[in-house]
Length: 276
Image (cartoon, rainbow, N blue to C red; front, side, top):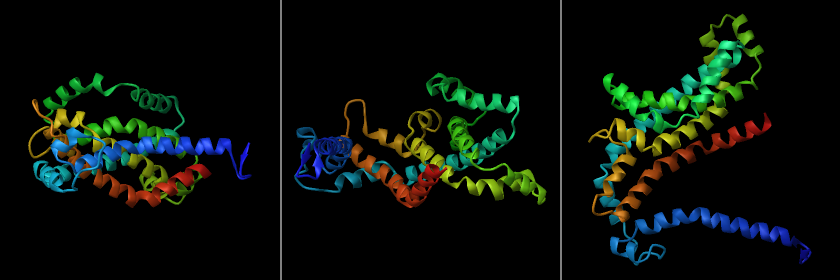
């Protein structure tokens, strides 16, 4: 059936369902933004209503209580450091595993894939105990742990992408006198840019928002990340939701900036992946 000879009933239904799904998806963002500008009294009176007067007092208080610059510095240091080492180690490991066709390399790759099935909660207490004995319950130790937990998925993604890069490139570089490291760094690694952007985005979102592992490793004044500092607003007898929501918006801003900066590369990586 056609409506005015242009739109079918199915098209209209799909459009309406898509609009509803979009509004449903955006509703949490609406609740966060609207309530971040309310007083505590207004928030408990009505969660969905617009604030009587838009004020930035919550953001000022949250900024001060979060010790935002210090928490932001810790989050940036941990996230950027972890993502860099994951990209470097995972790409090199995947390259060697994909180019070395032996039973040992196949078994090692199988171990990487299998480790993704192990829940973090099953190993967190023994891991923290071991890292404590090694005096690595600090930011450096946390980055090392993120390397361990983030490498498996990253190796899997790199391994699949490397299959589309001809092995003849490696052989040509070797004939020209390149060492294995030079072959990887100057020939292979630049070709991995699309998948490296994907790996960076996945790990950045995960590490930036992670609460559990930092709470076990660096939950001390001066080293806390933004998620750890945000928990400051939830006490035993009271919960300051208006300040917590303002703090959440402050925490989201760096990720949004990162997305807009990497947007061009994200589109390129999706396009390259579709063509390959």
